[in-house]
Amino acid sequence: MATTPTPEERPLFGRPWTFIRGVPSLQFLPPEGPLEVAFAGRSNVGKSSLINALVGQKGLARTSNTPGRTQELNYFVPEGYSGGAGDMPPMALVDMPGYGYAQAPKDHVEAWTKLVFDYLRGRATLKRVYVLIDSRHGIKKNDDDVLDLLDKAAVSYQIVLTKTDKIKPPAVVKLLADTREKIRKRPAAYPDVLSTSSEKFEGLDELRRAICETVGRSA
Image (cartoon, rainbow, N blue to C red; front, side):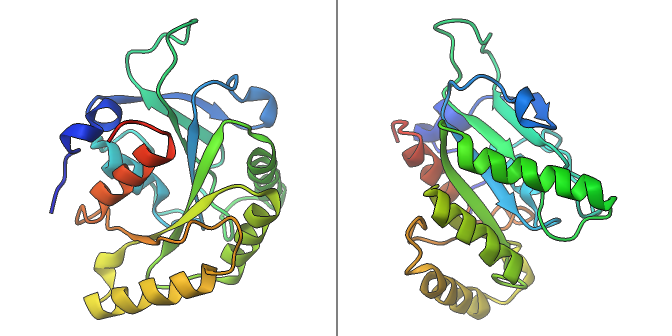
């Protein structure tokens, strides 16, 4: 069980990462430049925890037990880039607002839901969306709605199961097979399904490698 990046992944994950911007509406998006990979999922699915585990920094992305805490598109890049000409980060990670249930006023929920959908449809540098699915619940109706949107917009996405330490190993194997079958005919879905546990540091190397391949970094 590895908890640190492998040598070939260190150009991306072996350095500190930093938060650069929270985006409450599309007008605040950073200029299109580095390739982006985004993390989507239902509220409280564990997006922030997974990002923290992925880069090995406990406090990079804010975590909360309150569904709907993340209400902006939160951008993270490796440290050491000024943003000037010729000094472009190799990539950016984007923590997206959770969809589904949120303890917030309805108009706030609608506003950040629109932000997410507009971002997915219109961001040219968005290379892939990692759609996180809580392994205890599997794909729900609101997950299917987001997958439908991604298919319609032709945005490449890959399913990542989270919190797999919360169910028994045979159930993980079955869930992986069931999930692959559910997405088999979806046109924008990457066929391989990943399983992870942020708490047990399981599946992180596989996810790091998938990201490296997605953004065309040497691995």
